[in-house]
Length: 213
Ligand SMILES: [Zn+2]
Ligand SMILES: [Zn+2]
Image (cartoon, rainbow, N blue to C red; front, side):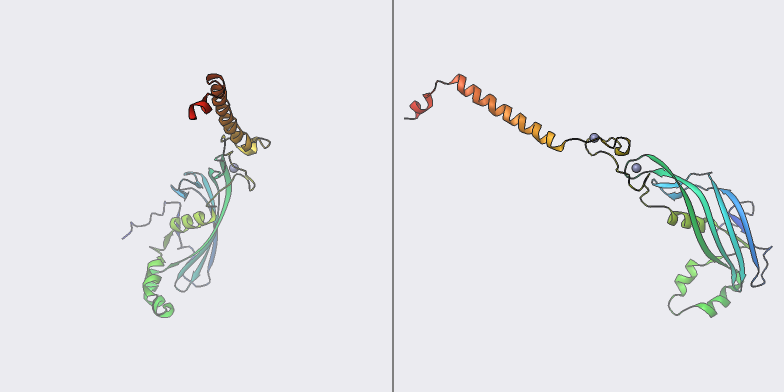
């Protein structure tokens, strides 16, 4: 059993005012502080305590309350290409059915398709004392709305593979890749040259040929 819902929790909503007459509608807005781990861990997320604006539409239906809503917040993270900190506006939409616990059996008779009972039951969320906890629904919606690979700007060029400088800060920056290879070749050429010089200076011309004969 999960702990009883606490009506003082800002993510717990009370549907008593809405009532159980099917078709009844209630719209409400609420600003909450983002709970912990509100995003994709280590990539991008809404910082704990940051404001999240909620717009909800509660609709009373036969088996429970259908909740449709939008959440707006600002997420923070870092660019996956250049690692600069970034901020982005998140707008997450969600819709979830919270069933009356006492409507469970009725709902099952009417809606269960053969074979998907178990799955259906696991996924179902229920009202408890006429209240529901929006947090898991909201968290999933926000995570889905966030980019898996956030970038500071669409055309971020990332970091220089040679020296790690951020290319957007220094667009003309480049390294001559040829230079590096050339330097290696020059080094090689230099050592060959030294070797030749040593042979030339250290050995008498023609000595080798005489020794071979
Ligand atoms: Zn970037
Ligand atoms: Zn560089």
